[in-house]
Image 1 (cartoon, rainbow, N blue to C red):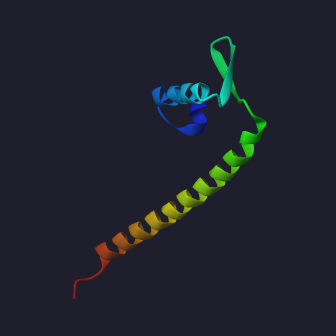
Image 2 (cartoon, rainbow, N blue to C red):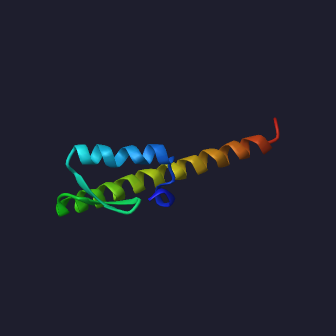
Length: 81
């Protein structure tokens, strides 16, 4: 999972424990690897909706950041009147 989420291993390892305590996931250990699955298959749809919403928010923020950076770059190259 680490290559997909891009966060520190210590931070990621806390998340499944939180979800297990809330009875949202169950873990199945295979050797050194633990595979997690949702306790209720209906959880997939709200998670898809949340991903869509968050992706839209992040896209908007990325566009805003690009606009701000472009404005800052233009401001640096403008001649002073």
